Image 1 (spheres, rainbow over the protein chains, first blue to last red):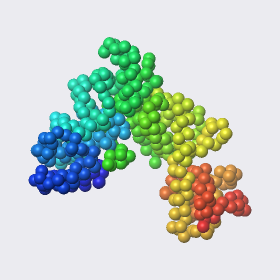
Image 2 (cartoon, each protein chain N blue to C red):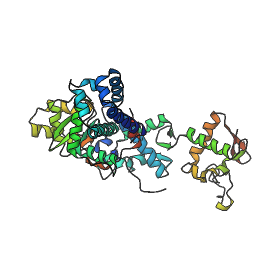
Image 3 (spheres, one colour):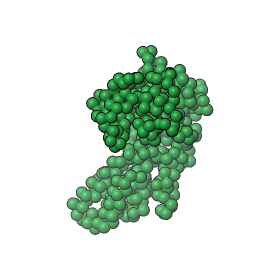
Image 4 (cartoon, rainbow over the protein chains, first blue to last red):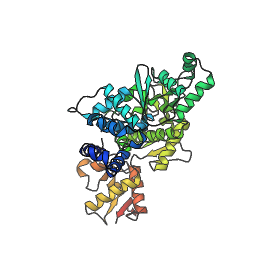
Length: 223
Length: 195
C-alpha cells in the first residue's frame, strides 16, 4: 500500500526474527523493537507478563497479518469511523496480499486480531448477526451500543422504531445510543428516508466492499 | 475525455445528502462534496452554473437513490469551494457561479511555465490569440480555422485541456498579481505581456 509501511514491515519482521534471543535478554534491543512497534500503533508494554513469549511464539505469518490488518483499518477509518465488517477486512487484506501470497481465511484474521487485542492496540471484535464487526479505533461502546450495531447489521441502518420494536426500549434510551454512534463517527444521519430518521453505518454499507482504497486514504494510513 | 463518470461511494450512501450534525463527520462530508463537484464539472466541461441548475443536476440530485442535497446545504458546499479558491460568484445575488476545478493561481503557474519553456518571455499575446479566436470579448469576430491557428493558441494545447476563457482571464490576473505578467490594452482589445 505505501512504500514506507512496506519497508517498515520488512524491517520489523527481520529484526524480530534475527534478534529473538537478544530481545528476550537485552533491554536495548527491546527498546528498539518497541519503537518500531509504536510506529504502527502497537504497544507491547500494554499486554500482560506473557507478552514476550507470546509475541515471539506467534510466528511471522500472524504478525505480518496483524500489520496488514492495521494498514487496512488505518486506511479505511476515515470512511467508516474505525468499524469494519470481517468480510470487508478479508477482501481488502486479500487484495493487498496479491496473487502469490499464502491464502488467508477469516479465522486467520480473527486470530491475528486477538493477538493485536492482547498487545493493547484498541482492537475489539463485536459479534453481529452471524459475523463480526472489527473495531480498530478505541471508541466507547457499551452493551447498548453493541446490541444496536447488531440490529443495524441486517440492512446497514437502524431507526428509533426498529430499536423500540425489537429491543423493547424506551424512546430516550434508543435516541441516546444513536446520538452516541453519531458522536463517535460510526453512524451518519439520513433525514430524507421515508418515515423517520435513519442512522446508517458506513461500516455496514455493502456497496463499499468493492471500492478500492483511494490514494487519499492510503496517505491517511501513513503513521 | 467524456468517459462515463465514476461516482464516489458517498454518492450512493443516503446520508451523504443530509448535512451531518457531527462536526468531524461533516468535515469529511464537505470535503467529499467539494471533490465531487470539481471532478463532475471538470468531466462535463462545465465552468459555470446557476444554483437552480445545480439543485436539479444529477450532481446534487440522485434520482435513483431518491435523495437530493437541500439548497441550504448546497450553499454551504459552494461556500467551501469559494473559500478554497475554486469558485467565484458571478452576481451579487449569488445565483450563478464560476467553477474552476483548478485554481487560477495553479493555472497561472502552468501558463508561466509554458511561456518560459517556449522562450516567449517578454512577448505580447492578444487575448484573441490565446483563446484561438474564442475570445468572448470579441463576439462579432470570425472563428479562426484550425489550419491558421498560431502557436500562441493556448486553449487548444493538451496541457491546457479543461481551461476555459473565464478561468484563463483570472489566471492571467493572478500572474499579474505576482508581477509575472501584465494585462494591457492592444489595438482591438486586450492582451497580456509576460515577463
